[in-house]
Image (spheres, rainbow, N blue to C red):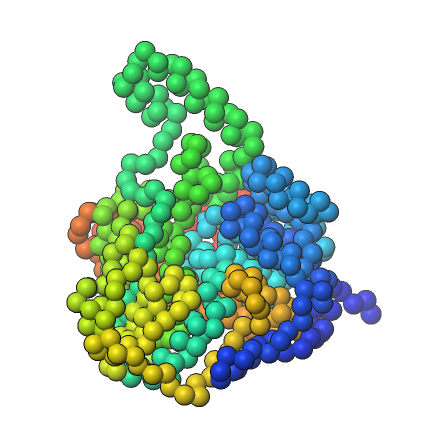
Length: 491
């Protein structure tokens, strides 16, 4: 019988992959030379995608590169001259579906699901950037596909590979803080433009410039038209839009970074950073299956995210802790100063705080790279001895590459469960919890006023009070409808 590459990857083994440890002693794993047989296709190869390509190349062989921006694609292809180049992700699967084993997906949020789902249906191991998906239903969909395919998946929230995240979560679960009381997470994002009335079209631009300075208006309009023409010679705008409704391209407003601030393409500050900053609290407190969420924002137009927001979640009791409130703050908002002062904590631009009856766990790092255990007054709260946690594979470089190394090790050993942030077990459920907050932000369009409360059935992915909500479009943030040419999700 012929042995396929996938059969080989499933049955081959190497020495240990980093299991339960007490004092942080991870088992050593095989190095890159033993992993070069894994062929990887990379989708979205600029920005963060460039780092994902580089990390994958350290352990596997890059055989295909795909990006809708030809400048980005050609720039990355110079580093991998043997890799085939593509602009449309569907062509990669059509032409090279039997020539790669694994894939990275580092595109705009709104294209993660269409690309990753095609890979999972083809039983490709998949590494997809955070926040995994743009909407809640898409996260559940990818989790279900990954479980059915039996492949190794990892979300790109690289802090997951840090021992501090895993050890801190284990300490809290073991009871170092006693009974849990509340959770706070905050960020300095957005660092990209957000807020109402930010879109632009040639018609809108022309009207404005003619009113502002009619003497130079026609020259300015002609110059802008030429700029757009040249940009679209490089960027395939139709493919960039992909699953999203059509809108006119405008330089600098969407591609290549500001897309994060648009409802159609990104997931705002919450989607961008909570998969990092809330990662430790999520694991420590089991922040799954919230029952309700409500938000207040600086105002938005259902097109661009608000410049700032605050979100309040409610989590029900489970079999080891009581009910738990969780508050999210962005745009450099922080928890109440008196709460921080109670434990001797100085405000930081980003951070996470878990409050218990015995004290708090405070992490001042976006990624959970460090934490402090403090009692009231700021005294150190000692860690519990002998608490075990599962470390990531040993690696002396950056945690971003370590996160991919764990994924590669899982592929080599044929053990999807080795991936800490797998789509089905942690990455997907974490994304579901996070993105529920955006339903509340959507329902909080009026500046400075708390929006409608969303009552949530996490098991069924249903807004229980949808019929009574006055806010339109809430259901589409659960189960989006794609444009023709792309398969809709099925959950």
